Length: 127
Length: 127
DNA sequence: ATCGTTCTTGATAACGAAACTCATTACGGT
DNA sequence: ACCGTAATGAGTTTCGTTATCAAGAACGAT
Ligand SMILES: [Zn+2]
Ligand SMILES: [Zn+2]
Ligand SMILES: [Zn+2]
Ligand SMILES: [Zn+2]
Image (tube, rainbow over all chains, first blue to last red; front, side, top):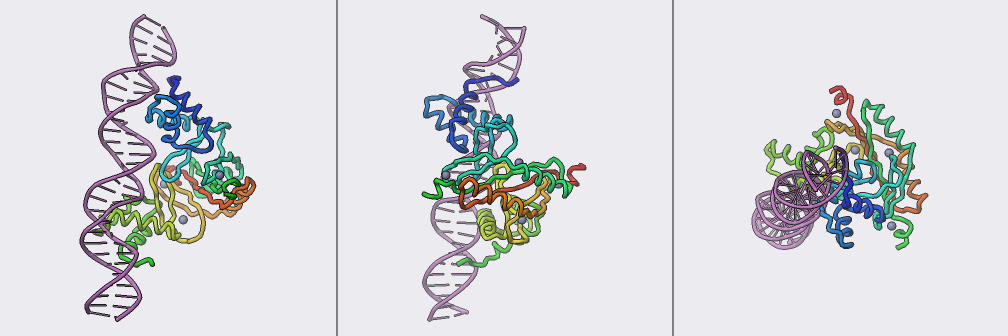
């Protein structure tokens, strides 16, 4: 059974107020700055659980996991600013079906995929 | 100026004889098993350089970097078996143009993307 | 070939993200 | 309130990767 603790809710809320993707450590610092006595291990566990349950998206960048609250709990992808972290949610049915068919064509089963687009957002491009 | 050392050549050759993606540590062990006195730091540096120069592809999996010799030195993607590491090189112009256009549509410049397809290869599916 | 300069190497230390440990806390059903 | 048990968290450990820096090797010049 999965219990409701104020720690998990604090992580969920902190994730929701963050712009773009954040690391577990960054979120931990943010929570500590607000006076929360939450532990680092708990933040790691909560983020991992949220990602599994589909409430958060995660991606690997430079050897660390970044997380982001996920408004639509359906499969989708992201367009992410390399500089400021601004993130746009992307739906791409064409990519979904392409990935599935390319796997099938080569005899692969249980296909999954990693699709992320990076760039400099309009604001950071001007900077 | 970039110098030619037997260490870099050994790494290049070891990469070439490896099936699928391998980690720096795995390649280091393989080289050591053949009697090579190469150092671990050198393997990390060589792999990093090869990836930058386009002679190797790299991807992040479970917090570690994996590398693979890349026969065509052009941009492409991979279909990778989660179990045995078997890799198929994929060319997908449709995905390339999709990534570029989706970035442009949202005002993003200098677009790049990460696209990897995972699954179980035919052999591993039967197992 | 010898020299001298500069890049490369590699054993080891240092680093950082993440997982683990386990005594303590506290949720939730009764 | 009581109890069983999942969750917490400070500290420890793991593990991939990078930094250090003295010793060694490659290359150009002589
Ligand atoms: Zn930006
Ligand atoms: Zn998708
Ligand atoms: Zn390739
Ligand atoms: Zn396989």
